[in-house]
Image 1 (cartoon, rainbow, N blue to C red):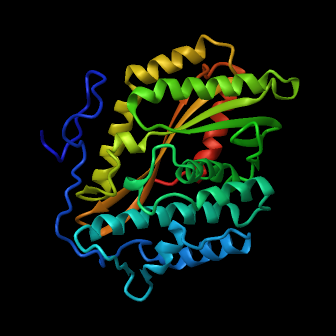
Image 2 (cartoon, rainbow, N blue to C red; image 1 turned 180 degrees about the vertical axis):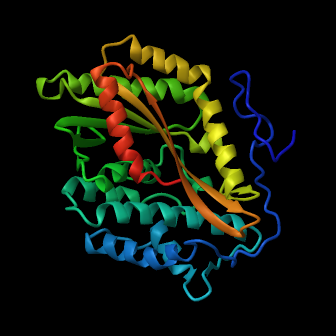
Length: 323
């Protein structure tokens, strides 16, 4: 297999024996910079200060470890293990970028007690994703808050109170979101149906009967084989490959069966939102970027009231998408 090209599966053998993406660590200087590369190091101390100002204890947490290992002058990280220095370095950058996104999303709005409870969970978990469990509360919560961040940035966020993962309001209509990290392709259908059942159960109440239901899933871990970084020739190369990769994912029978299950039920689910953050290294430009990638799957015809609302809402939210 040519490791520089994506293999589009004709069957649901989604992850082949070889990686779709070239993940070997070719020699390069991790001190090279480009774009807003160094901005993450300016923002990260602000994110840490924000957590502490909210009473979040960071002693011996992964975020404190990232902060302590950061040499702001050299813009690099130092680790005890030189053998895996590159992998450790990129793992930390991804985690830092995600926390910065959450901080930027919520720092300008009132942080409720429910958000604070999630932030306390957020800082838990292993330093490195490869050492964490698939049901990690910390990284499940990071996805939860990452998705809530889109609504907060769009100024339509309500809260993260139970029974919903996220609630918002747009054009006088309530929006409810269930967010699920998915650890394997075979679990895609069951996790979507689980979220559908949760939305349906709580939308039976009259106050929620007209709510607009969204299921958000993060498939990164199995789509990219838990890779700390994915190496591309350049930014354009990453755009083409990642988009094609997502298209191949939504064409699998697991997604098709989940969509059919939703459409044949009475559940108030109007949209499946696939979202992942993808750590990338661009060889030609010589810098690292965490890409935020979304794909939206409407469940209703665009010629219906729900379908028109979905188009309006997603057009509005897309202004706050990151590439």
